[in-house]
Length: 255
Ligand code: PGA
Image 1 (spheres, protein in one colour):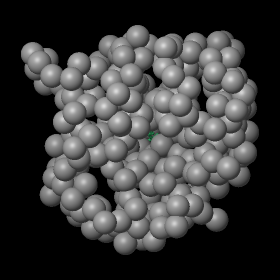
Image 2 (cartoon, rainbow, N blue to C red; image 1 turned 60 degrees about the horizontal axis):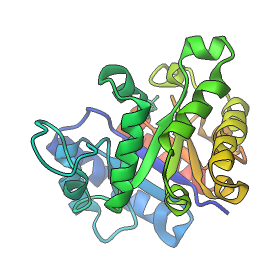
Image 3 (cartoon, protein in one colour; image 1 turned 135 degrees about the vertical axis):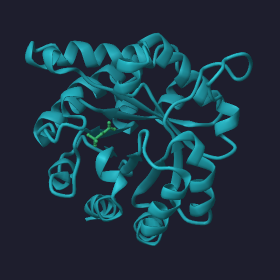
Image 4 (cartoon, protein in one colour; image 1 turned 90 degrees about the vertical axis):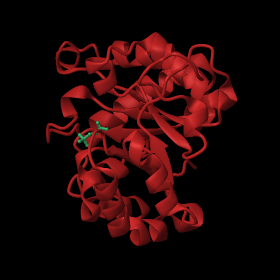
C-alpha cells in the first residue's frame, strides 16, 4: 500500500508575509488530515519563504519542500541554492519541473545530477516528467516520458529510488485548466512510468514508488484522479495558493 502524497507547488508566488497568511489559514485543517499517517502533505513555497513556512508547521505532520536545488554543494554558483542549505529547513525538493526545463534550460542530465545530490543529502526528491502537446498529439508520450524517467534515475540505487516521488505532469495540462483525464493519466503512470522503473529496477520497486498526477488539479476534478489505482496523489500548482481549495483537495485524498 502506497501512502498518498499531495504537494503544493507555490511556484513564484507569495511573499514571506503572504506565505505566513496562507499557512495560518490552512495549518490546522492540513495537520488534522495528515495526522495518523494516511496522507502526506508537503508545502513547497519559494526558497525565501521555506524557513518561515517550516517554522509555522513545526510540530505538525505537515512537511515542507523546496522547488529546486543545484547539484553542487557549495562554491561560486551565484544565485543557486545547495542541498546542505535546504536539508536544514525542509525534507523534500521538487526536481525537473517542466517550467525549469522550459525556461531555465534544465536537461535530463542536470535533473539526474540534482536527484543524486538531493538523495546524498537526505532530501526526498519529487521528480517531474511529462510530455508537451505536440508530443502528446503525435503519440510520443510513452517514448518521451519513459525516456525522462530512465534518464532521471540513471545510476540511482534501488532504495533511493523507492524513497523518491515522481510527478506525471503533462505540460499541456499545467496551468491551462485543461487537466488530463483520470484514465489517461492512470495509463501513463501505470504503463510508462512504472514500466520504466520496472526496467531500471524490478517490478516490486516500480510498485513501491509513489507517483503523483499534476496539471490543473482542482477540488472539482481531484476525485477522478484519486479514484485511479496507479495515482498516488497530486502535485498542485494554482489551487495550492487558495487555502480552501488546497484543503478540499487534501480532504478528497483521505476519503
Ligand atoms: P497547476 O500546476 O496545478 O497550476 O496546473 C501544477 C504544477 O505545475 O505543478
